[in-house]
Amino acid sequence: MQRIQATSLGWLARAIDAAVVAITFVAVAFVRERAREFWSFDVVPGEPVLAAVTLRSQFHLVFAVVPLWLFSLSQHRLYDDFRRLRADILLLRIASAVAVAFGLLVAVLFVFPPAVPTSRSFLLGFAIVSVVSLFLARRAEARRAGRRQPAWNILVVGGALEASPFVDTVLRHPQWGLRVAGVIVPQDEDVTSVHGVKVLGRLPQLTQIIEAERIAQVFMTGRAWDTSTLRFVADSCEEVGVTFSMDANFLGLSIARADVNDLGGWSVLSFSSVPSDGTALLVKRVADVLLACLGLLVLWPAMLLAAVAIKLEDRGPILFVQERSGLFGRTFPMLKFRSMVVDAEAKKASLSGENEMSGPVFKMRRDPRVTRVGAILRKTSIDELPQLWNILRGEMSVVGPRPPLPAEVARYERWQMRRLSMRPGLTCIWQVSGRNKVDFDGWMRLDLEYIDSWSLFLDARLIVLTVPAVVTGRGAS
Image (tube, rainbow, N blue to C red; front, side, top):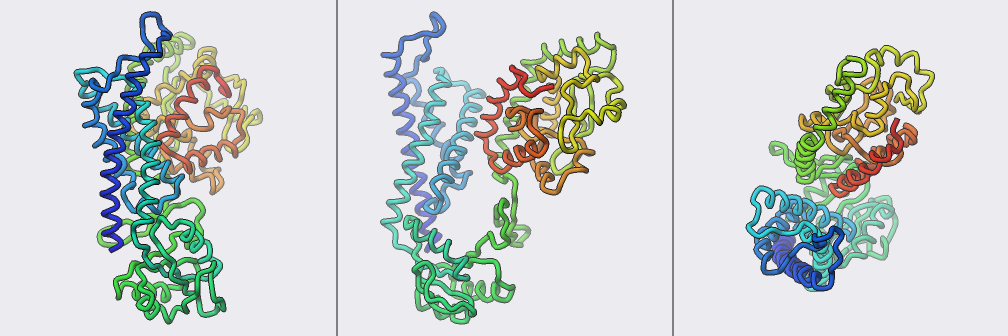
C-alpha cells in the first residue's frame, strides 16, 4: 500500500508539475511582452535591449518545454516519495533538473530552429522562475498530502542513543506520512522511552509487536548489530510482508552516499564519495564536447599565432606532451603549447631548491626555463588550449581538478588520492582562487570541495569565474 500511495502521489505530482510549468511559461511570456511597453533604454543604438517576445508567438514552445521539464525532473528522482526530501535537497534537485532541461531545450532549438525566433534571455528567465514555482508547488503538495493521507505506523529498532535522532527527524516531518508507533531496544538497555516515544519491547518480541501495532515498516538504526540479528529482523519483516529499512550510515562514513543496485540478481548496497548522478554526468560530458568544439572553432587563430611564435623563437617543438594522471590514476598524454626551453625537464632537478609550492608539486614564480613567448602564453593561459583535444578524447573535462604528474601522485597522502576520483579539467576552484597563491594542502582541499559539492550549476559558475581570472592573469606564472 505504501508503494501504491507513493506511486499515486508521484503521478499526481507529475500532473501538477506539468500545469505549473505551463502556467509559469505563459506568465513569464505575458510579463515579458508587457515589459517592452515601459522598457525603452537601448544599450546599442537601434538594437532594443528586450527582443520582441509575445505570448502568441512563443506559446508553441510549451509543447516542447513541458515534456523536457518533466523528463528531467523524473531523471532527478523527483517523483519518488518526494514528501521525505529535505527542503534544501528538494530545491537543489529541482534547480539541477531545470538546468538539464534548459540545456536540452537549447539543443533542440539549435537543431530544429523554430519558424518564429525566440529570445535566450526570455527562456533563461522562464527557467529561473520555474525553479521557484516548482519548488513552492512541491512544498505545498507535500504539506497537503501529509494532511490528507493516513500516517503509516513504523517501528524503530536500535539503541536509545542512535535511535533518538532518527525518531526526532521523523517527528519533525509529519508531511512524510509516518507515525513512530514505538521503539525496540537491545536487551541490555533499561529504558522506557526514546525521545518521548514508548519502548515497546526487546528484539525477541519483534514479530508479536509488528502484528499487535499494525506496523507497515521497520527502520533499523545503529552500527552494533551482528549478522544473526540483522538476519532475524529482515526475516521477521519478510515473513509478514513488512518493509525493512536499514540505516545506510551504519559504517560511519562521513562523505560516501549509499545506493542500492541490482548486479545480476544480487542486491548490492554501494557507497560512493563521488558524484553518481548519471544524467547530470552525461550532460557534463555532452557540454564538454560542445564547449571543446566551440573553443577550437573560435580560438584557432590564437592557437595558430601561438604555434608560429613558439617556432620562430627557438625552432623547437610547438607542443609539449607530458604524461599525467587522470581518472582513478590512469595516465594519458596531456598536451600544452611549449612555454619552456626544450631541455626544461633536464634542468628541473637543479632548481628543486627554488620550489615555492609546498607538497610534491613544483611551482616557481620566475622560472628561468620559461621562454619569452612562453611567459605570455602562461599569463594568458593560451598554453593550455591544446587540452581541448584531451577533452574531446574524453581524458579531461572543462571543469575538474588539474591532472597531476604520476610522480606527484606517488607522494600524495592517502586523503589526497580522492581528487583522482573525478575526471581532471582545465579549470576548477583552485584556478579562480589565486592558483599559485594557494598552498598545496589548500589546493587539494579545494579540489575535494569541488568533488563533494559538484553540480552542473557549480561547473557553470566556475567557467564564468575563470574568464576574469584568465583576463587578469591572477595567480598565474
